[in-house]
Image (cartoon, rainbow over all chains, first blue to last red; front, side, top):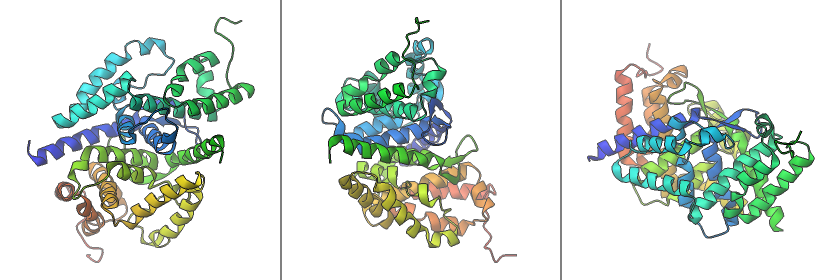
Length: 203
Length: 203
């Protein structure tokens, strides 16, 4: 491939990824009451990693974690954001996202398409230290915003305390100190009446 | 400092930085016609670095470049976005941003406040290879979005071709191949009539 063609393919990928600014998440921002989008979310995650890397349970490669988080949501350009507690849409989420990954990373020169796809696969598999810490940060940031917005996203979707705890426990797999801090915020939210502690079967 | 206090200060910094999602730039996004905000912009820059690092004129530390770009605009939470061609507001821009850097990085534990401030100072000074490449990417991304939106931001502010060339020439200091590509896009924009080639003294 000629250098000019290589650069043109890289640019086509970057221009396509600009659509991530249009993928709206359930989470509300900390200060403006507006729904967060995936581009803002991805920036925030990298800033969290830069600031909180010392709390990882194990040694991590900060650059690899950031790369994973920069691209972890680009598949949502095609597949959309799937709410973490939406069991119906979660069922075929991975299939939809796999197809998106093939299309979007395929815009890049082949060597980079392979590298970016491997990072995305590693993030999805959650087996390596880097992927576990990346997931911990992904959940911690969303949970923090939900606590700051007084749990409105959780209330709106009737998400209960036990579901929130189960969903976010992987924070502890990546960073135990961070999970301890977040459990404290959850306790505060319960005391403030922002989270329902009733099970769905409770009258 | 106790570990819990350290984490609390890190969290206070991250929550404050969420305000970057409210700092609106002059640039329009590639696909939705909406103004870009600083959080989206900072994510895009890191993705550009991840994708285009091979085009740097000199060897760079990709992680350091990303860290610079993740925080390079947080001072705008206090100081606002200064349009690149606004000579009046550019005059006291650095003073306003220095004060903001002191306040915002000062939320962090002292060692991190020092580290983040040093990266911001290095970016501002534009002397190291990492800072030059970071600046090249910062200007390249804005210029690309302006070209994609048919130069409306430039037209709206009566910015002419010679000003755009002068403003963006530092792209070549960081990445000559990238500047060659961008000059090609500028030529296309001129041919399409999206950019004024008249000087301000021309009748």
